[in-house]
Image (cartoon, rainbow, N blue to C red; front, side):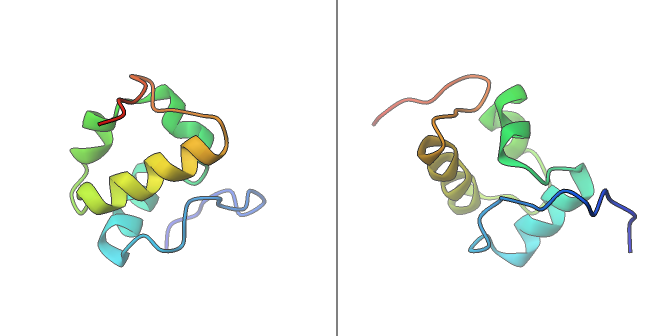
Length: 75
């Protein structure tokens, strides 16, 4: 098991599937605010991430008044 800063509680949605959660953990993403510094495309490049997981993160960011570094488009 990797040694992360366990004093920080993750606020990433728990509904994200296991492969995507592992990809985020390996990349060091434990807080939604970290996604404000990267683009959606960069996160989608992580092995195990898919459109559904990305959408769950996007929605969680919006609920907190945040966006990915490249913002978001309402389609």
